View (tube, rainbow, N blue to C red):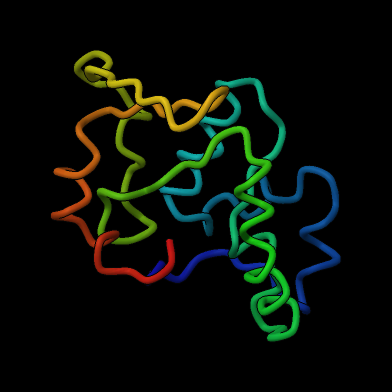
Length: 137
């Protein structure tokens, strides 16, 4: 958040909903979102939920309904990407670009059949981030 970037709006909805149209607007997409696309592609998955691109930002009804559905979106998600270390959406998504080799990983079992792979101890990382000050991710 906090950065101007591509958003789904009533005026561009028809254009952005066409196949492969995000490629035409790649320069307007914040780095964190680009990194999330890269991560999803490397995992050989096809879908990524990005509030700014999935909810019509200038339609209060769409945003309100969408936000009320987040529990279901996250509940069925294969993976939730948390951009915790950047100050805004132009920050690199930590761990996507390995310039010095992959970081140490910690696997934490959330519940049977669900696990988290942590790049560092989550409590210590989150305590000092902008993410810790937000009410919503």
